[in-house]
Structures are given as C-alpha cells and as structure tokens.
Length: 208
Image (cartoon, rainbow, N blue to C red; front, side, top):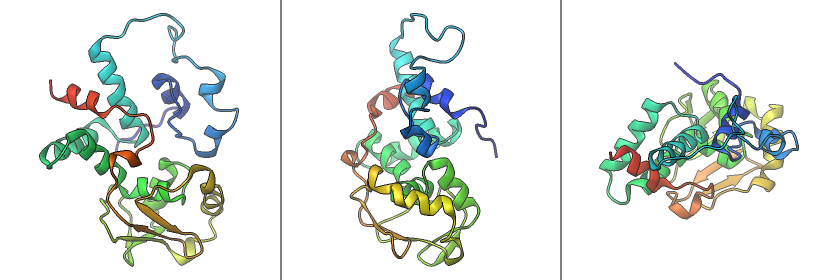
C-alpha cells in the first residue's frame, strides 16, 4: 500500500500549523514550527498570493495530512459523507474521527496517529473482544476497544497513557486506563473536533 515516507515536520511547515505528526516531539522546542515558522523549499520565505482555490486546496491537504490519508482514500470519505443525511462537512469529520487508528490516538494509547496505525497493523488491539488489524475500521456507539494482554507492557503505550492528561480525551469516548480499555459513548459532533479546520472549504473544493 502506498504511503507518505518523507519528513513529517515538512508537512507541518507547509500547512503553517502544528499537525502533531511526531507525537511528543511536537510539544517540545524541537518542533519545526517553533524553529522555522515558514514553508519549506527554496521560496518558502518569499511573499506569495493565494487564490480562493489555493486556500481550499491547502485546507483539504491539511486535513488529509492530519489523519494520514492518501488522496483517493480522502475523496472516498468525502463521497460517503456527501451521501449521508446532514451537513456534508460535519459528516466528513465524523467519519474521520471514527477511524480506529484515530480513536486509539484520541484515547491516548499512542502519541500520534502514525504510531496508532502501526499498533493496529501489528494486532495489538481488539474490538468487542475480536482481534483487528485494519486501521480504517469505522467504530460505532457501544464499541469497546481494548489493548491485548500481551501488549500492555509496550513502553510507547505506557508512556503515551501517562501523557494523555496533557492532551485530554474527547467527551464522545471514555478511557479506562487501569483496564487498558476505551468505549465509544456517542458519535462525535462538530464541537468535539478542536483542531482548527474549515470543512466548508473542502466541500467547496470538491463541489467544483
């Protein structure tokens, strides 16, 4: 499967905001945005005008990179959101938030979505007692995510759970740190997505 293998910090600089792609490093002074707060490349520090299309494109790229998706995957999510009842942009964010790899990150089992995706791929989690290894699984209300018994001593997981207090856990999920479990209490709503995202720009981009 194709995936981005380049430098993560370059993506944050391109979108001019912290995307938290490298876990704990993003909270330190080593963060690329803190050290070089301008776009990468030869003309990164030059002045440039951005068209309406450019603004919409940057917003789409930002969200796509936050959730670690390729263009084809992201477009499929948009098409599904467009078919659903309700506001397309909010439906899109709800679908992205309910991905298994994102939920594991939100619960605090991993310090980044990249790390959570790797943990899922290696079979460290179960959903309702069944082992899973597909990061894109859509979770629903009542689903229980649990770290397998043999995986509970992984240093990266324990360190991430200790740091979850700083990042916080969304209201639509519930974390039981002692039992290494998480519960989907409700579907995420727009207010639960605290990352500065203007989803209407993405809708406008794909509606052309």
